[in-house]
Length: 209
Image (cartoon, rainbow, N blue to C red; front, side):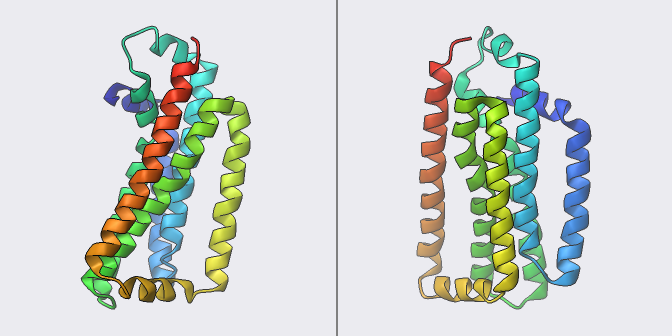
């Protein structure tokens, strides 16, 4: 799996560097303008774009035929396509945690919950998207990418119009214990992720190369 991740990083080297620069610049702007919701939304966009380009390259270069003629597990290929989402979600959660911790307006438990929510939300869309791209291919998969973009765009507009959503969300979580909330978020995410990975691996195993 490590070799597959390195391959994607090498393939997308320039795009990846530009993505990190954009992330840092927009994160600074989000913190300065106090629109923290921009950070997870932005970090959700980046993996979708990178994965779309990576899949396109694999199809164009017929990488899958080459890769699976070697002792490379199809499960490793599936896991490698979730790497960018995990990396960007980690960046977003760290930025949010540090900012909220320094600001000091929320308790540590609420800060951790919001950081976990960032990781979950950013990884969720690529996880849902992955089986569709593997099933229908990179070309048709672009339609899925566009639909996902529209969903993120709609969510971002909704959150901008109703800024009270985040405080209300925090208040809702506050009704339950920190431990139960954290466990609930992690379990729900792992269930969705596990289902997505299992479906994706089955799709890959049925393909003939």
